[in-house]
Length: 307
Image 1 (cartoon, rainbow, N blue to C red):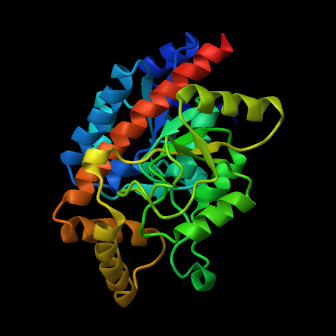
Image 2 (image 1 turned 120 degrees about the vertical axis):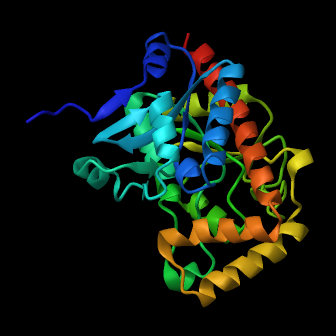
Image 3 (image 1 turned 60 degrees about the horizontal axis):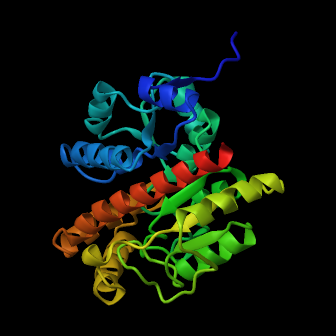
C-alpha cells in the first residue's frame, strides 16, 4: 500500500513550480462540456497561449488513468477534447473517479482542490457555479461556493452565470465568508454581461491589490480563497437586457423537460448558444481569455511578493 498522492505534473508545470515561477490553474469541464470538438481543443490551446504570453505557465487539470494531471501534454489534451462522456468532477466524486481509473474533467471546486495539492494559488475559469433558480425548493447549490470557503486558491471568473440566482449566490458567499472582489468596477458582473444590477462587496483595481489580499488571508489564518469577478471585455459583452430573454426561454425549456442536477448547466448553455446565434460562445471565449490574463498578472504579483 502506498500513501503517495495520485498527482502527475507536466514537465512544464513541474519546472515552473520548482523554479518559483508563476503558474495558473485551468479547469477542464470547459473542454469536455463547454463546446464541441475541435473548437474545444482550439479554445483550450488559446487560453494556455494567453497565459504564456502574459508571463505565466498554464496548468490545465484533469483526471485520467487514476492520476490528477496538472498540466496536460499535447496528446492528453487532444484525448480529453475527444472524450464527450468524461465525468464532470466536483468534490463529491473526485476520489471515486481516481479510484476507478476513469477520465474526468474538473469543475471549479475540483480544480481548486487539485491546484492546492499541486501548490498552485491562482485559477482562471469562465464563471463559477452558484445558487440555482428555485433553490429554496430544490436545494440546488453548487459545491463551488463552499469550496471557495475551504480551499485557499484565488479564482478569477467573470462573476456567476446569469442562469443562476445571483442575489442568492452573493448571499451564500457572504455567509461562507468568501471575499467577492469586482475588478475595476463597483458592480458584480454576470458572465456574458458586465453588470448584474448588484453591487459587488469589494472592489480592487490592480493585480497587486488582489495578490496582497490573498497573502494577507494566509498571514492571519483565514481559510478559503477569493473570488475575483472580472467583467467580460466591453467589445464582447451581451448586455443583461439582451441575454436575459434567451436565459428565461432556456430555463423554461429545462423545467418542461425535467432536466436537473449536473445536466442543467450544459443544457442551458447549449440552448442559449442557439438562441443568441452563437454570440454567447463568442463572449464566453473572450471572457475566459480575459480572466486568464488577469490570473497570470495575479500569479506574477504573488511570486514577486514571496521573494
